[in-house]
Image 1 (cartoon, rainbow, N blue to C red):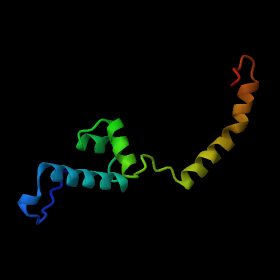
Image 2 (image 1 turned 180 degrees about the vertical axis):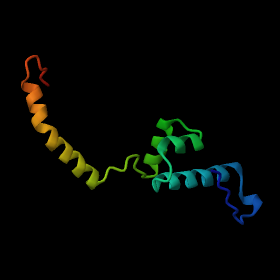
Image 3 (image 1 turned 45 degrees about the horizontal axis):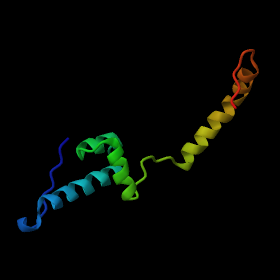
Image 4 (image 1 turned 90 degrees about the vertical axis):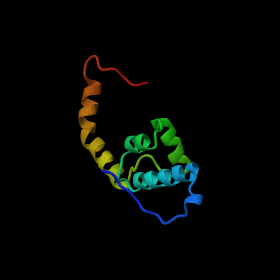
Amino acid sequence: MKLEIDLDIPEELLDELTRKAIRQDAVLRLFESRKIEGGHAARLLQLTRAAFAQLAQQRGIPLHDYTFNDWQNDTATIDSAWPEIERNLRAPGARRLE
Protein backbone atom coordinates (compact mmCIF):
# COMPACT_ATOMS: atom_id res chain seq x y z
CA MET A 1 0.00 0.00 0.00
CA LYS A 2 1.22 3.44 -0.80
CA LEU A 3 -0.10 6.56 0.88
CA GLU A 4 0.34 9.99 -0.59
CA ILE A 5 -0.58 13.08 1.38
CA ASP A 6 -1.10 16.42 -0.30
CA LEU A 7 -0.19 19.25 2.08
CA ASP A 8 -0.54 22.89 1.12
CA ILE A 9 2.87 24.04 2.35
CA PRO A 10 4.90 26.62 0.44
CA GLU A 11 7.78 24.93 -1.41
CA GLU A 12 10.38 27.26 0.13
CA LEU A 13 9.55 25.84 3.57
CA LEU A 14 10.17 22.23 2.52
CA ASP A 15 13.86 21.53 2.53
CA GLU A 16 15.07 17.91 2.64
CA LEU A 17 15.35 17.86 6.45
CA THR A 18 11.74 19.01 6.81
CA ARG A 19 10.52 16.37 4.34
CA LYS A 20 12.45 13.71 6.27
CA ALA A 21 11.00 14.91 9.60
CA ILE A 22 7.43 14.79 8.24
CA ARG A 23 7.99 11.26 6.92
CA GLN A 24 9.55 10.19 10.22
CA ASP A 25 6.64 11.63 12.21
CA ALA A 26 4.10 9.86 10.01
CA VAL A 27 5.85 6.48 10.30
CA LEU A 28 6.26 6.86 14.06
CA ARG A 29 2.57 7.69 14.39
CA LEU A 30 1.66 4.54 12.44
CA PHE A 31 3.93 2.47 14.68
CA GLU A 32 2.65 4.09 17.87
CA SER A 33 -0.94 3.29 16.90
CA ARG A 34 0.21 -0.28 16.07
CA LYS A 35 -0.81 0.00 12.42
CA ILE A 36 2.66 -1.24 11.39
CA GLU A 37 5.29 -3.34 13.14
CA GLY A 38 8.66 -2.05 14.29
CA GLY A 39 10.61 -3.87 11.59
CA HIS A 40 8.41 -2.38 8.89
CA ALA A 41 8.74 1.09 10.40
CA ALA A 42 12.53 0.72 10.50
CA ARG A 43 12.60 -0.28 6.83
CA LEU A 44 10.37 2.64 5.83
CA LEU A 45 12.76 5.01 7.58
CA GLN A 46 15.82 3.16 6.26
CA LEU A 47 17.07 2.53 9.80
CA THR A 48 18.41 -0.53 11.54
CA ARG A 49 16.11 -2.01 14.16
CA ALA A 50 18.47 -0.75 16.86
CA ALA A 51 18.41 2.79 15.45
CA PHE A 52 14.61 2.65 15.19
CA ALA A 53 14.36 1.44 18.79
CA GLN A 54 16.50 4.37 19.89
CA LEU A 55 14.38 6.83 17.90
CA ALA A 56 11.16 5.43 19.36
CA GLN A 57 12.65 5.66 22.86
CA GLN A 58 13.67 9.28 22.26
CA ARG A 59 10.07 10.04 21.28
CA GLY A 60 8.67 8.18 24.29
CA ILE A 61 7.04 5.48 22.17
CA PRO A 62 7.17 2.02 23.76
CA LEU A 63 8.46 -0.75 21.51
CA HIS A 64 6.24 -3.35 23.11
CA ASP A 65 2.60 -3.04 23.97
CA TYR A 66 2.45 -5.43 26.94
CA THR A 67 -0.88 -4.79 28.60
CA PHE A 68 -2.26 -5.77 31.98
CA ASN A 69 -4.47 -8.29 30.14
CA ASP A 70 -1.33 -9.83 28.56
CA TRP A 71 0.20 -10.13 32.03
CA GLN A 72 -2.94 -11.79 33.40
CA ASN A 73 -2.93 -14.30 30.53
CA ASP A 74 0.76 -15.07 31.07
CA THR A 75 0.37 -15.61 34.80
CA ALA A 76 -2.66 -17.87 34.20
CA THR A 77 -0.58 -19.94 31.75
CA ILE A 78 2.26 -20.24 34.26
CA ASP A 79 -0.15 -21.16 37.04
CA SER A 80 -1.74 -23.90 34.95
CA ALA A 81 1.65 -25.27 33.87
CA TRP A 82 3.20 -25.11 37.35
CA PRO A 83 2.27 -28.65 38.51
CA GLU A 84 3.92 -30.13 35.42
CA ILE A 85 6.99 -27.94 35.92
CA GLU A 86 7.33 -29.18 39.50
CA ARG A 87 6.93 -32.83 38.40
CA ASN A 88 9.62 -32.36 35.76
CA LEU A 89 11.98 -30.82 38.29
CA ARG A 90 11.58 -33.82 40.59
CA ALA A 91 12.21 -36.29 37.77
CA PRO A 92 15.50 -38.24 37.85
CA GLY A 93 18.26 -36.35 36.07
CA ALA A 94 16.40 -33.05 36.11
CA ARG A 95 18.63 -30.02 36.12
CA ARG A 96 18.18 -27.48 38.86
CA LEU A 97 18.26 -23.78 38.26
CA GLU A 98 20.81 -22.05 40.44
